[in-house]
Image (tube, rainbow, N blue to C red; front, side):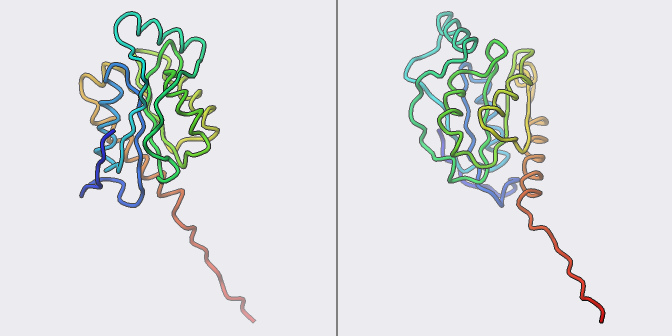
Length: 188
């Protein structure tokens, strides 16, 4: 996790943002870092475990956990999501399912989450199924969602990330903007 302060020129001047990501290979973290930079996120939380998922054994363990939808132990989060206006949750697809460490985070923090947005990274498919799983675990609809492939991340995710961040800021403003009420005087 890295602390960041709001920067000039960022999209989210009016709301506090926490970016929470889990990344086994580093690709999801790359996207989460870009989002945090675009939004001027105050904090970045990386979901972490005490057990490492490297090599083929780590891959097989990850695939098995995803397929049976387990909730492995994760380290206690550093930040309370309830202290933020928006939490962006970024996770990879494993076996067409949500990565198990992020599943654990959502199960633990579901009641602490304010407004949310989702980012899912995929090798080629399963992203939309994972978005549905995340909605169900959070019991709410996100402000916006992004499914991005590994190829797009490796080439240049900047355009897609910028569009995601602009839509997030716009949707947030629509939800919190006071509704203008027009009161007409009754004519006697």
